[in-house]
Image (cartoon, rainbow, N blue to C red):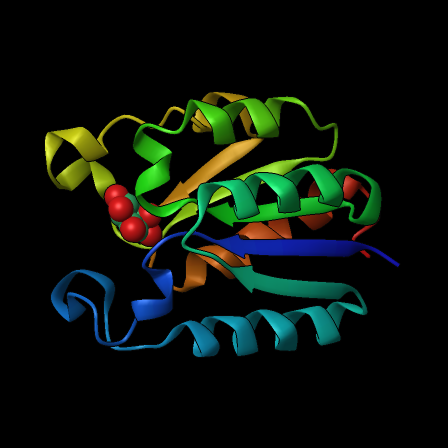
Length: 147
Ligand code: DQA
């Protein structure tokens, strides 16, 4: 059975109250519930975690290489400058899909660059909460079995 890890980075615990015009009114727990429902439908296992700390996220990425079959990650603002998270992703061999709720390309210039995307299998941007579900589908496809 496939096991995927969904990692949300800094400030994503504030979804629902944080800049609702940008990120909408749904909370992180809604995202996690949607992802769990999708996982149940596909008979796979998904674990969802969130941290505001770079080192914690790096440890999760390292551990996932042996414990999981793929990662969905929204690194939040770390996307734009964390070479440490980029190197952690580059150090593992399971596929990683990067997700952004907002369309970062329509926003401030500093958000246009992702230092992490070049070491991921792909990036999903601007599709709101649905991006996480698309990312799970993408991981299933990459696994090749659909399960
Ligand atoms: C974000 C975009 C980032 O620029 C921002 O710092 C976030 C959320 C997104 O999901 O749209 O925290 O990753």
